[in-house]
Length: 258
Image 1 (tube, rainbow, N blue to C red):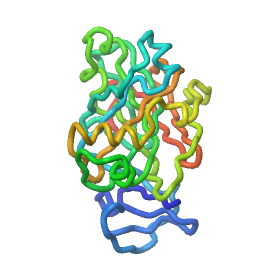
Image 2: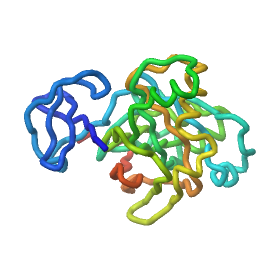
Image 3: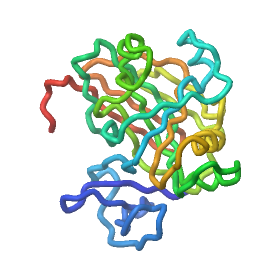
Image 4: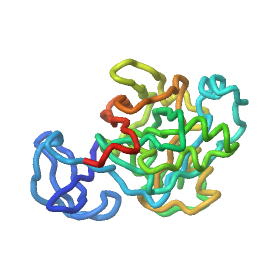
């Protein structure tokens, strides 16, 4: 397995490859040809951004049976998709901002699929080849606005509502890895990606029959049961087995950016 990150270096966001010896800068996005560069330090020394800046984030609703049941919804017969804007994307340790329009925002631990090649209307084999790698995601949701609006765009789209990271994990067998969410260190969600109703390849196949997928696009694959509210000051951590942990603190809208 290879891991790739994005981080702030000399005033700009750049890509790097994580190795046992440290992080080495690379010349461009890892799903294109790139040249290795100099060592820039250890992973915990870097100011990480989201590992990719996607053109679009496609999200899948109710993709775990237990989450559909806790939501009081029917189990879908085919994937339910919606979009988050790229402005919702933030990286590890970046704040999740609590919007003044909402009185309840929830965490949702998710596996994110990173697309590595342009594809439209592929057969299942093409869908498999379109997947570059995976990372952790938090599909933050203004739950009260979701119920009020009757559709999900506003509730899912606030700035900072799509934390991604810490790394893109490439050349990996997804298997049945565990997925967890902890709030202030307390376990709130625990499942495995094998419990998804529609697996990653099927989701890519489904989405690519609707819209062209480009390198760097991201698909969030749904969340298991256990979603719940967050408050300013809370720290939420999403962990997928072998992929690292994505940690973000919730702040009020009035709190100044650091």
